[in-house]
Length: 313
Image (cartoon, rainbow, N blue to C red; front, side):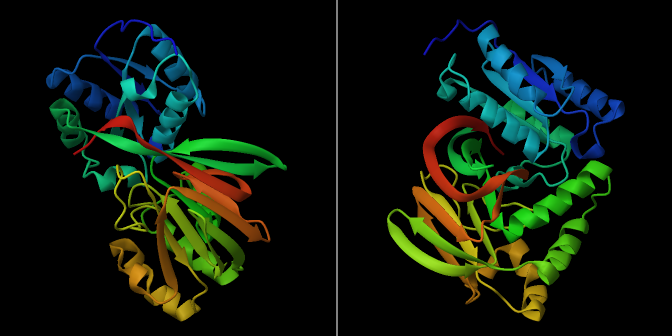
């Protein structure tokens, strides 16, 4: 692995101009002003199309940058992780990644108490407290071809992925508000058919009729749902929460428990922890990672322990 000399010690700030439909010029001007106020040396760049940040980060790493701030949401952060782990110029362990939350869900940030308030988030950046974060890699099918993607937060399988599709469509139309997640949970409950899943966690094999399965590293997804409430992002293990079929009325009564994490106490929920995960299903089901739709089952998950340095609150 070739490591070019570090060109400078500046933060490379990548800005998603459509993050949460909030990143108007005035919002960026405020962030830029605060970065200067707190004397954070930087160079910034606006992305111009989806996944543009992947190419920018590849280029920036070759140019000598090692510190990146993503001004955007969970999907933008996911792009950065995939950029860092799909290049061979620099050891990912030499890279530091930070987030200024400007998205709609901002779920990864919740695990680390990084607030949506721009000034508070930039103060966290200035203090520079870091953690060596586990990184997940998931393998999935697209038109019967195996592909893979990296993630920092959480993958949702089945029901979760279907809700995510609807949320993504609303996001594209600019119609995503705080209650939309709950609305789509309700409408998907009315129509979704549970899937027969074979789950293998470190050679332990079980079978379940499954409504939803979360596999991840941090605690929150879906706009604040605490689906993996005891996940530890640097323990070298995936946490899993599997929800079996549940009656509609009970599901509706239990929605708040998804947000405080107490749903794992329900008899319809099983939890697991492991390093290597396999998921087979009949019929095939869909997957999302950090809010990004990917592909269909079967799935394989591998964890890369303490692989990326991130700035935390």
